[in-house]
Length: 473
Ligand code: SAH
Ligand code: SF4
Ligand code: F3S
Image 1: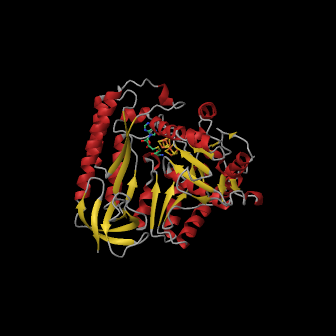
Image 2: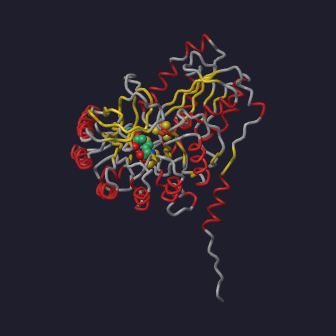
Image 3: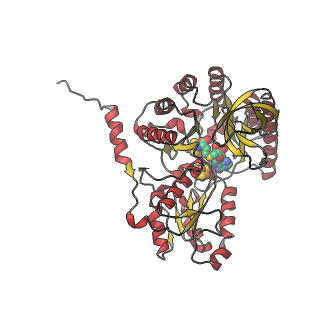
């Protein structure tokens, strides 16, 4: 007998998965007055995901009536939004939290909270409760929406140390946000990471990939645009995997196209993963001039053997093919990257392969790191057999190489006119304005009329190692 198979409707299936996980944020009336007359301070470490989370935490605190202040000394509640990506990052946070002890002793009524990626590590609960009595509250990235409730419990006298290693898998919409700049907005498109690079703690601290519905993303872009935003940066640990968890075939290219079609002046996205990068995404970049010609594409290593042991899922030649393809199709595109030296078993010859890749790609800049073993990741059990002195020497050599290309690329900019989105006065030298060009180069410039948030034509007059100098024209 002939069977009557019914194919599932992919769109209906996607909607079902979307709806099952989507939760609306809601703040009860009694929590809306909790912070009236009180103040808050947030210190943020780590990547853009944390910067965006801090904007949500600030939004929740302001919804509760708290007002911002500039230091823990002035604040009734201080939050430390932490990063766990390398040991040095953790040690830095623990040092700063340790130094709060006298302040807590003098003012026991002040509340100190740790959140973010370190707070998602189970070992942190024991460490904090034993060694850091000044901390009242610990909550991870998976339960940020519970923060107002946790805070109300602490304010009622409870010491709430909580960590949930398992997230609910939900995507919470409608959380308030207090953005640090009105003309530039970070917009999350997805949370978590499923890549499990063997050195990396992020899949454990941020959980599985969960994509937001494209409708929610686009609504947020339209809202910030209506409020005057000129630039949005779409955020995810691996944006190219957007929508996979919802059963979408080519989710990121579709979303990027829709985002570009909102007409916002500038779109960036961060971070890309070479493994999931599709030709169709390159096409969207080609077709939409408001998708900026600047790409952060972490390569990590130039050695195929190391890339394999890192579980990156591409070879150096596959990376180079993607790189060449983009350079060919998007004239003037600039590249930045992340590189790790001293991964377990990395030989001199394998490190040389990384240098060769840098020579080939001549990145505009690169974040370079010495490998740091992270408890619970696969690489932590690999024998860490590269001596520290060798790691440091490789890092210095790599930085010199990267710096040379950065300077050369900057020198080639002299005489060009670039469109710069003005960030106001430079922090290092308040006599000049600063901002980023479309190609994502830092430009310091003189202008009598430009203001924060303006897009200004700047003629580049001088190249420095990590920035350009110019005059508004
Ligand atoms: N999702 C992004 C990056 C997240 S972490 C991506 O996949 O590219 C940012 C960078 O930190 C990584 O690209 C990597 O270069 C570095 N990093 C991560 N774990 C590390 C570790 N254990 N030791 C040294 N560097 C690390
Ligand atoms: Fe970490 Fe790899 Fe995921 Fe990036 S893609 S967050 S490096 S596991
Ligand atoms: Fe750090 Fe967490 Fe970002 S570990 S790099 S803050 S995702």
